[in-house]
Length: 132
Ligand SMILES: [Zn+2]
Image 1: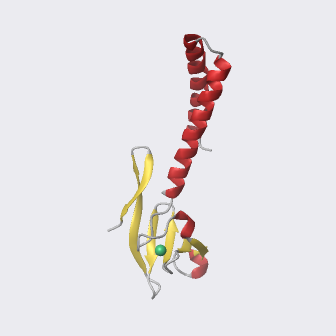
Image 2: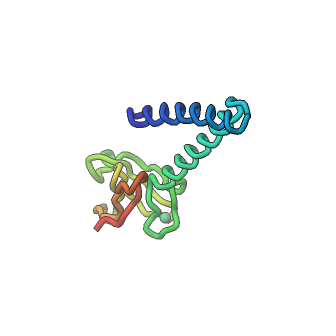
Image 3: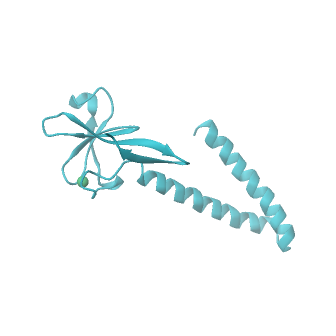
């Protein structure tokens, strides 16, 4: 957890407490019950955000078929002699990729690297764009 995430989490918790007190008073309901509903809602949102981010943590493969669950880790790039750092992953189509945190490259059959996708931050989320 980074500092930003800690601050956000505390902010969300304080926000829930505050909003549930106000809403509870306004609706004439117990702020505990309102707070529980808000907590569930916040948890659902966080989970949805996590799933969304996870799906985007790797781009689709070159054929546009394989997603996050289809890549198989084959080893560290350094051990395989592909690059100095990063992971080598293989998609179901049989293509191998070099994955570093913000770059996804295709490993060609002769072992060279071909630029594929770059990770960029757009608004709140990361997304992959063509690396050209
Ligand atoms: Zn594939």
